[in-house]
Structures are given as C-alpha cells and as structure tokens.
Length: 195
Image (cartoon, rainbow, N blue to C red; front, top):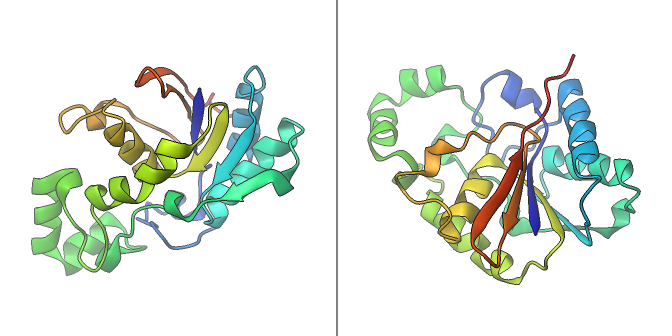
C-alpha cells in the first residue's frame, strides 16, 4: 500500500490563496491535523517516508513521523512532489485572479485541469513530473504532498480520469490509501473534525 497525505492546513489555505510553489507555513490547525493524521496511520506499516520540499508538506511529514516513532532524518525530500506552479496566479485569491486576469480565469473555468497556467504548469505537466516517482515508490511508503499532486498520481495510475477527477474531495491531512498493484484506492481516511 501507498499512503498519500495532503499536508495540513497552511496559512495560505486560511486566506484562500493558490499558493502552489509558494513556500508557506502550516497553521496551528494544520499542525493539529498532522498529529491526527499520524494517529490515523498508526495501524499501518510505513517503511519509507517521502515529502515535498515545501515547508507545509515537510512539517506535516515530520509531525506524522514523530507520532509514529519514525526518525525524521529518514524523510526523503522528493522535488517531483511539489505542488502545481500556478504561474501568473501564484499566491493569489480567486477574487484577485478574476479582477486582474478575467479572460485567463474564464479559460481556467472552461478547461479545468487541462488548463495550463500562464508561466506555470498544467496537470499533464504534474503527471509527467511524478510518473517516474510513482513507478518506483516502494510499498508501505508514506507520501506527504499536495492536493494537485495527489490528483495527478490518481490520474497517472488510471484510478481517476477526466470525468471522475473531482469526485474525491481531499482535505488537508486526509489519508488516501492506494493499492498500487491493483490500481485502486483501498480507502480514504478523512481527517476527523478538530474540537
């Protein structure tokens, strides 16, 4: 099994910013979510840990490792796991994008994940970027990354396609358990509401 975890809530998530490659911190809630994800992973065997180099993913991985008594020095930083580059829209809110780039935002709405962000990437670019990693990641690996990358992995493995891509809502610190050999999602452990 492969355990895909979306990073905890970031400061950019709070502000509804498309942070992509912008290196933003986890919020306090994001740190709590990472702790919960670590507890949710306790019943599973984790042999390897990979993380996007962005702070929000790296810190999430460190917290999960701490909960599971995994040495954080064993976390392998994997550049292919970095979030989509939103290019011209990087670190902007939807309102800011609509106000300053109306025509481009209309193209994004029309083409959805097939849209290539000006000066940035498309989902096809992410799929190409993560394919070699996915082909070689060993079983029992924890992969802490980003929403767009998780979607790209599911597209690459043909678990999702263009019509089903948005059927799965992957919240911060949800755990997507993949049976890579069978090419299917075994289950999704939703993050429990924080009280």
